[in-house]
Length: 120
Image 1 (cartoon, one colour):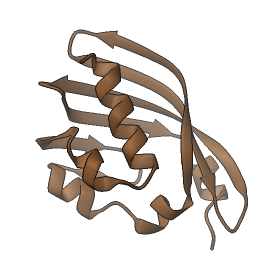
Image 2: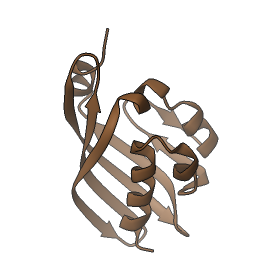
Image 3: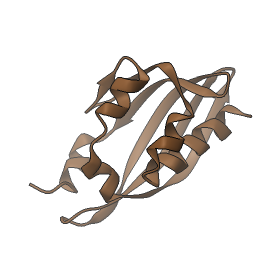
Image 4: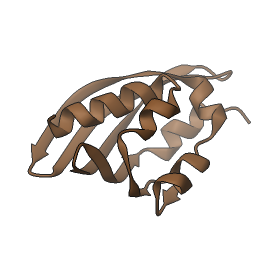
């Protein structure tokens, strides 16, 4: 399975709200570094996912991916529908993959663009 296939399976499940399936693509020693969430392992990452985010998520549109060995960079639109409105937030995610699982993620996005879609 290519790194891009691993990420696609993960993000398909995540954006559908199917965290049980998404967990299958995350290694126990997974680390996450993003503007609004940091985690040092798989459990911490999933324990800190906001249920509100999942309820407002309306999928994603992959724009481009680049693979280099065990590393993958994905540029995508994360689609949201909130009480404030709907829109897409551009995201860039850099992952490392080992044995068919994501071992790390660095997520970058415009927090002002994201916050503009969030209620209150």
